[in-house]
Length: 324
Image (cartoon, rainbow, N blue to C red):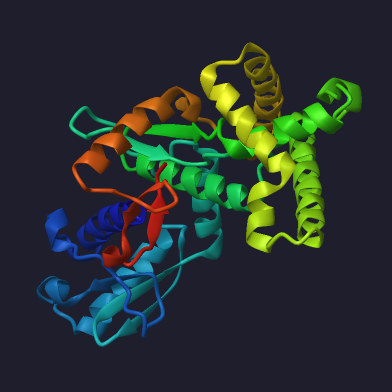
C-alpha cells in the first residue's frame, strides 16, 4: 500500500506545480484510506490547496483528480465528495500487485535480528505404533503455519518434534508382529512402514478384545478381564524387558521404529514439513521419572491408590493427569 501512497504523493506534488505553479512539501499531501461508506481506495483532501488554486474545494479536487488520472495509469476513476478526492485503483493493478507478491518468496518477510529471542515451537509429536492420522495432519499444518508466520515477522524459530517412541502402546505393535507377523517387512509387503506397524497395532487390539470376551465368558468381570487378558500381560512384560535393556526386544523395537520413521518422513515430505530438532521419549523418559519423583517428594504430585503418580489440575479447569 505504501507504494501507491508514495506514487500518488509524488504525482500530486508534480500536478500542483503544473496547475498552480506552487511547490509543496510531501508532508502537505495527506493521503488517507477511503472510508468504507464511500467509493475509492485512497482519499486526498483538497482543502489545503484552495489558497493555491483560488477555487472551491470541489473545483480544486476536480483539477487535481484529472491531472492524477493522466499521470498514474493505475488510477481507474475518481469522485469528489465535498472537497475530498476519492481515487479508485484499477482491478488489474491489484492483480499485478498480488502476482508480484506471490512470485517473491520474501515478500512481507522481516529479517531476523539478534535482538529477537529464538522461539521454540513443538508440534507433530507422533507415536511410533501407527501412521500419522488426520489429527496429526491438522497439528502439523497448524505448527508449520504458526512457525512461518512468526519467522516472517523477524523471529528465529526452532521447530521441534518430540517423538513418543516407547511405552506400552509401542510394545503392543511389537508383540503383535512377533505373534502374527511371519517376519513381514515393508519391503516384503510393499507397505509403507508406518502403515505396516499400524496394522499390527490393530491386530493386537483385535486379539485383546477376543481374550477379554473369553475371560468374561469364564466368569470374570469386564474390569478384571481387561486387566488380565494374556496378550496385555505379555505386552507389559515386553515393556519391562525393554526397560531392562533386553537385546532381542531392543532390536525388534529399533527395527520397527525405523520402519515407522521412514513412513513418517514420506508424509512430512508430502506436506512440506521440516524440523530443526527431533527428540525421542526413549532418550528423556528416565530424566522425566526423576522429575516426577522429585515432584512427588515435594507433594506437587500425589500417589493414587493404584500406584500411579498423578497431578490434579482441576483448579486450572483441567482434570487429573497420570504422570507415571
